Image 1 (cartoon, rainbow, N blue to C red):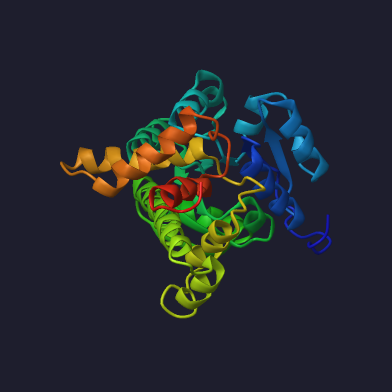
Image 2: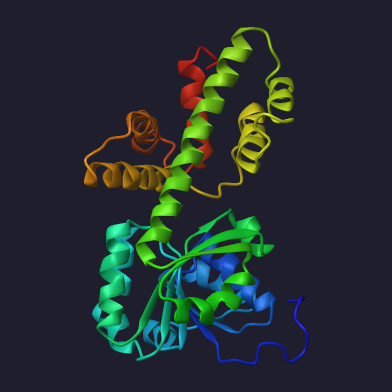
Length: 302
């Protein structure tokens, strides 16, 4: 791998738990920046992919979990609780160590894990990231880090190797709230793009021409441009984030609203659309594919 000066980052290996598509990309980026990574994953195939990127792979999760800095990237609340709050990992946690959880989880679970790691004299930091695996490989993520100032400051240089910006909050749960709200906005945007394109097609407009006009100044942000291109071209591969995971994140935001006595009417519609895909044949398609549901509802071609 290239990108690191000889002798740079001579610190001990960072422990890594969870080498899915995003985990592999993030770990590979750190290796590329000269940071040694010791990674663990349940599945052998992803572990082999990580090894091909220079990650040292272990079959013993305790070995990864016992490092001074441990990063995890797991898919959902259930798996995060099972692994990070499990007896094997907790027994390996060393006092003073920092666990950096990059998963998109509920704020409630973030608070639970923060308390659990504090009880073991360890630090817990939530650091979910916005961006796809290609952005992770290029160090182009946007990271939201929540936790006490000292551990956040300690791991900030590591996060900076992954990101164009790192935004900090005093509590782990706050970082996770920002992440699920951001993902919710992306889902709503994908749905609205599908509706707009569906009506445009029926009205005789070329979707790509419409997108060029709307994203020139009015909606010039990254999400409208990138997701708009996916929708107008109906190009949803390679898959970077599945419908199943997207449904999970929208449900997390809906649950948070209910926790505070509110509800999300748009979220209910988005969740239903994603749910149809998950229950049908689209569970493992890219979550931007939800735009096709809204496209057909708006009268676009089926």
